[in-house]
Length: 163
Image 1 (cartoon, helix red, strand yellow):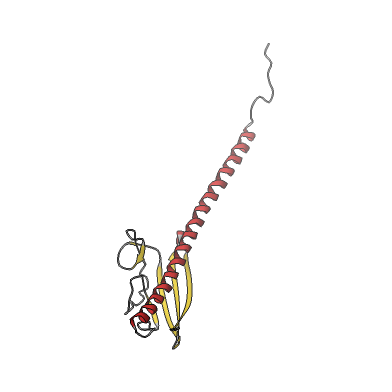
Image 2 (image 1 turned 90 degrees about the vertical axis):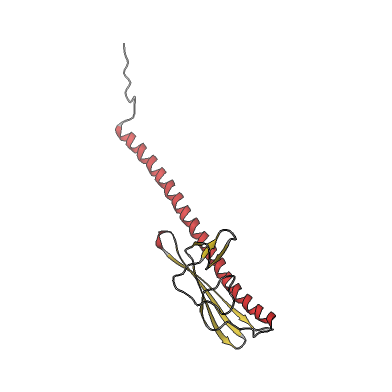
């Protein structure tokens, strides 16, 4: 004699519910990983932009300090205007060229405007005289992120003739 078991397997409805739960879990995990990668890229770009902005301030500060050492007026070559400077800039300063991106030289690890691979970053340095002993330096870094979003980092400092 054979004994038949009732409920000996999964029904079609039970199978579909199980597959639906598994798919939902996998899609959730993949979405989380995708968003994490995107936020990681955004954080990296913001860090690079902040460092490029700080470098812009340091370039202008270096020109001021070099003027003191050379016995020149502290603001020699630092006229009001928009500029495109890198670590090798000296007066006369190159005017800002909208749309020109910084280049990254992998050999020495520097961003510049002469050699290297194109990047997404543009840097504009604006110098404004506030008084005879004070200038305002504003650095704006623009870049386009993943998905075509536009981002901007702005850093501002004031340099003084304290000598």
